[in-house]
Amino acid sequence: MKVPKSLQVDEIKESPSPPNDSEVRINPVVRRNRVDQVYRSIAAVSGSFVFLVMALIGGFLLFRGIDALRLSGWGFITESQWAPDMGGAFGIASLLPYTFSIAFVALFIAVPVSIATALFITEYAPRRIRRFLTATIDLLAAVPSLIYGLWGLFYLQPRIITLSKWLADNLGFVPFFKVNDDFGTSLGVFPSSTFVAGVIVSLMVIPICTSVMREVFGQAPPGEREGAMALGGTRWGVVRDVVLPFGQGGIIGGSMLGLGRALGETIAVTLIISPSFDAKWSIVEQGSNSIAALIALKFSESTETGISALMAAGLALFIITLLVNTAASSVVNRSRSGSATEI
Amino acid sequence: MTSIDITSTDPTTMSSDISLLDPGHKAAGLTASNVACWFGTKKVLEGVNLDMAPGQVTALIGPSGCGKSTFLRTLNRMHELVPSATLAGEILIDGVDIYRGAIPVTDVRRRIGMVFQKPNPFPAMTVAENVLAGLKLSGLKSTRSERDDLIESCLSKAGLWNEVKNRLGDPGRALSGGQQQRLCIARSLAVSPQVLLMDEPCSALDPTSTRRIEQTISEISETITVVIVTHNMQQAQRVSHRCAFFLAAENEPGRIIEEGPTKDIFTNPHDSRTNDYVNGRFG
Image 1 (cartoon, helix red, strand yellow):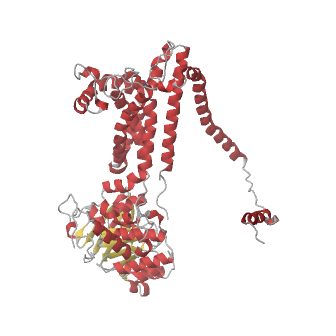
Image 2 (image 1 turned 45 degrees about the horizontal axis):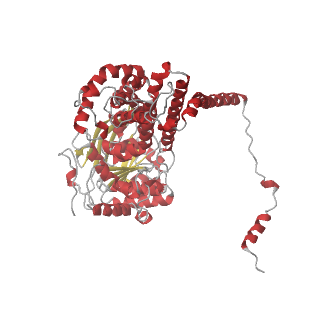
């Protein structure tokens, strides 16, 4: 008689081998001693504290911003004006591009500078200079952003707008550097722009990027370094074939951490820009904005609806920076850092 | 055979007479005279005089911590890469000092290659790229066909060609430990060294891989001078023409106790300590 295949399988499934007492798998019991338990719970509580704060912030922003979000609906994403106090429309459609433009200008400057600085520190600098440079860069990270803002406003901006003008005059065919000025490009249209704000923010981002990259470059496996040297490799050869491939994750991760910082930078941007709600391509022309700067500027003069709208904008910024930083840390973790060639 | 355009910033380099893929290039002799080494203030080696004749295999033997590896690393200027490491004395390749600027350091290291204890292929590169890494690292130019020839000839010399000829595009890390080490040897051979230094190249390998590498050593030693550090007495006997026995008394720098033809060192040593060591009575 022919037995269908499926039946055969079922039969096998239905007749498992009888359980064998000696093969019951044990579940190893770990008995921790008292001290271990105490430390364990302290560590666990502090660890979960981070998540708690995170959740509280997110929850708070959502709670306070939900009224405004209900009011605006999808308009919150598509509307570029910001007039919640007068009962008008409001949204982050112009704020987001401005926020990202400032951050990208900052990264465009900060990433190459940071890579070069980190390589100089780990590969080229003599030991004493290495220590001095590392300390100085860490010190730069400790300068309050208000100081950067003031210095940028009164010292850097009057000087850097000549570069803005040069960009507009010579590269004006690129939309980023185009300036619409009926009177020709006078210096007056260049201050308070995305470009100036981005340059200032880049100074704040460089220390973060550099220290992440320096850390990762420094971990490049000595065995591979020596292997490259022993083949007659030049310093640059070692950097190109060993350090940079190894440090890829650090470069990407460091840049994204910098991006997170740049997106949220508040006070320096607030000081530099003159708020604009019409998104435009030009980064050198006067008028820019960012979510953080908007919140700082409008907070004290807002009504209840206005506050709620600002909270909603804050929630958007919170989510974006959270995503960027999560992506950054996963890239850093997935890189080869710490795993040299093993047998 | 076309010779290769060698990019070098220093016109006085002696590299221009080395041509890649040139089987006729000559093994070079190394001479160490009165070499002493320090790490910081600790002197780890002193008074080392050793002649490593062209085309010969010299084995450096001795218990751990007697300075053999340190000495090996002075021979191609790897020693100075350790911060605080210093040295005294003279190392000559074919009579030319390698430390006093007559030859650029990158040329020294290309002419005097090194294979390390732990296989260290470049993980971001394929098997083929690993073989050619030295050319790229030192800025040597080559044509496509030269590169293909070089890959095959170097991998063959290292006894690896048959195993990897269909996996040239695989990452170097995908190979087994023994294969990785042979890949590292092939990589060193690709820049046509005149001397090859090997720092316990088989200590992490299985017996089969060890045998293949010993075979490679005897094959290449006709055109390349080999200096090998080993803890394996049988290996020293099998592969080397001459042996140098290093020893460090407690809290004293290491020095060469005895040096001579391998057969004499193992069968008829002058010093009783050599006799004890080669017969496994200490170390």
